[in-house]
Amino acid sequence: MSGKKYCPQCRTAHLTIKDYDGEEVDICRQCGGVWFEKADLDALVAAKCQRTDYGDYVADLGPSLDYSNRECPDCSHGMQIYHLLNDYHVDIDVCRACDGAWVARDTVSKVVKSAAIKHAIQDMNQSTSWKTWVFEALLRMPVEYNVKPRITPWVTIALVIINSLIFISYGFDLHATNMIFENFALAPAVVQEGNGLWSFITATFLHGSMLHLAGNMYFLWLTGDNLEDALGHGRFLAIYLVCGILAGTISVLANLGSPIPSVGASGAIAGLFGMYLLWFPKASMTFMFVVWQKKLAVMWYFGIWLGLNFFGMSMGQGGVDYWAHIGGFAVGLTIGAALRKWVWTRNPLLAHLAGPEVQVKR
Ligand SMILES: [Zn+2]
Ligand SMILES: [Zn+2]
Image (cartoon, rainbow, N blue to C red; front, side, top):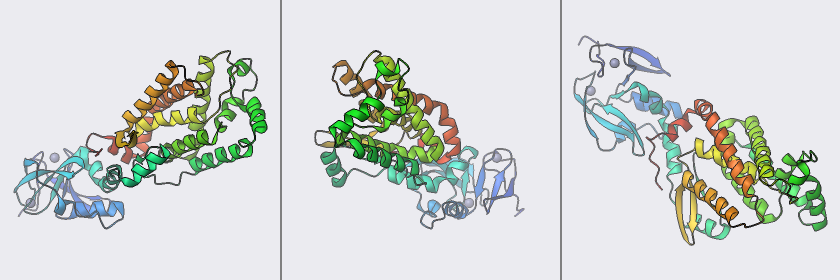
């Protein structure tokens, strides 16, 4: 043996030994592909996730998809193509004679991150159960399936507590409620005269009933934890408030001259929906048609929600600030689109999870 290995992709270029996060691998300087000798790929993936239950990729691969036209650099056997994971269709070449694995350049980072991806997909692929059915049948609230946040969402928790405490302080006393709404709710006729401009913010912390509060806080919790993880605490708070202010502004512009005051966090939360949809497109929410519970892609879930808002508005159903919802959602989509590249660069796992390689069961 000469000891020199040829790149299975380029064939003429030699592989050179390189340290890849503590593992010695063979890399091709020409095409950027990486050759993992027997068990090295598993060792790297296991080291990356600091767990012991993920280190069996090469041994546990499912059926081969096809024969590869690349040859093993170590023993010259023809290799076979496999999906890295059942639900993650990233292709690798494996030599069945020596269990070495060849990973092309554009998939190296996806493969290295695959332990975390595997874990996240397991969470996203969970199926509905009698527990989720009872939950939604009783509370009429969806169940979320998404990657778990890595941080404690302190801002989201604080917002839920503050909104609840504020409601408790006045909500059970009609006289106090009227006084608070008169001063701090968002009334177009008042703010368009330049008065009470603080109400663009204060109104987002007020709610009209226990049910109104509970519904809003549930959706704030559902979407806020993942978004706060993606953005960081401070930025999440700033964007939440901006969504609330702009949703209120759109509501005022759509209802100029109206003395009817508007309250609620739903405009700001609708903004969160827009960002959530763009940054977590593979997440699911359950939806219940009478008694049939179904996991829906967030695009469908928020699409139905948006449709119901337009429907309610066209039917002239009162008591809901439809324009704050629609406007907030549009603001969230705009911010979400503007920041998506930044968010995905900051959180490569989210970018990988959003890709076409991820197979979500619904
Ligand atoms: Zn090469
Ligand atoms: Zn081999």
